[in-house]
Image 1: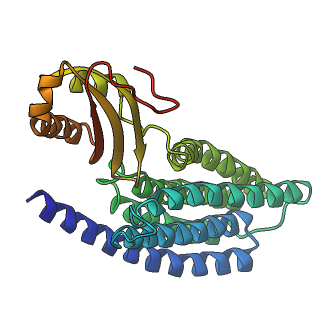
Image 2 (image 1 turned 60 degrees about the vertical axis):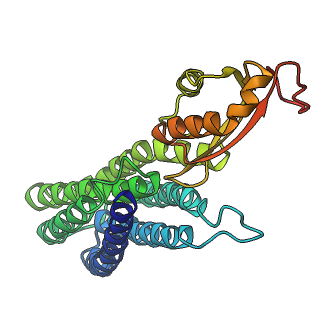
Amino acid sequence: MHNHNHERNIEKLNKAFIFGISLNLLYTAIEFGAGFHFNSLVLMSDAGHNLSDVASLFLSLLAFKLSGISANKRFTFGYKKGTILASLINSILLLVVVGGIIKEAIERLSVPPQAQGLSISVVAFIGIFINAFTAYLFFKEKEKDINVKGAFLHLAIDALVSLGAVVSGIVIHYSGWNIIDPVISMAIAVIIVFSTWSLLKESFALSNDAVPKGIDLEKVKESVMQVDGIADIHHMHVWAISTTENALTMHILLKDSNELFNTEKIKNNVKHILLHLNIQHTTLELEIPGEDCAEPDCTP
């Protein structure tokens, strides 16, 4: 039942990615054209961000597809790590877009361009619904997978950016204060940086085999130590092999040599515990008292 549900969720996510890519690509083209026509940096910067969303969704979809490819002699874990790399690339992509927005906004602060306020608001208003609806497709899965979280953040931020563009257009129409266009663009850039920073840190950490967020090494040790026959554990390493799967290696010191007759039971109990701690791939080495670990960084 678990596998069936997992496969069904993957299928739903794939459809959500394809739908999101198609819808956002269409809107990006319309928004950029409108921004160019109405001379609005807010619309063009939002279109640029929307384009990064399209790239983000495509990368995420590609990563999901690659993660389903079977392992081989060279890639023994398959291509699961691609989901982590996609998250890292997506967060970097967002920051590159921010740099472009800030540069253009600074240039326009000195000579604010004339823009048609209500036209900007109408186009941006459509963007709120498109981005909010697409973001909703990823809402339920965003806490289970940072790759999905990255896609959700891109889209949710764009909904807020579009809201900013609506406000900008209304202010320009009723006050003629055209400088609001680059000002709001810079505010949008700041929002993107703050919302992206945690994703960048998390994806960078996972790409460097840091302990995945949500896994407490002390809790892992305490839980494993509850298994009968175990005296101590050491040389423990936990890392992510994808945005949804984690791996662990561990040396287990048995209470005495008699426990060697119970190794299968001990290992099964440990693996069962680790599964409940979101660790799916486990390699265990059992040792008896007095045995030398014989590894450079192995300390009892």
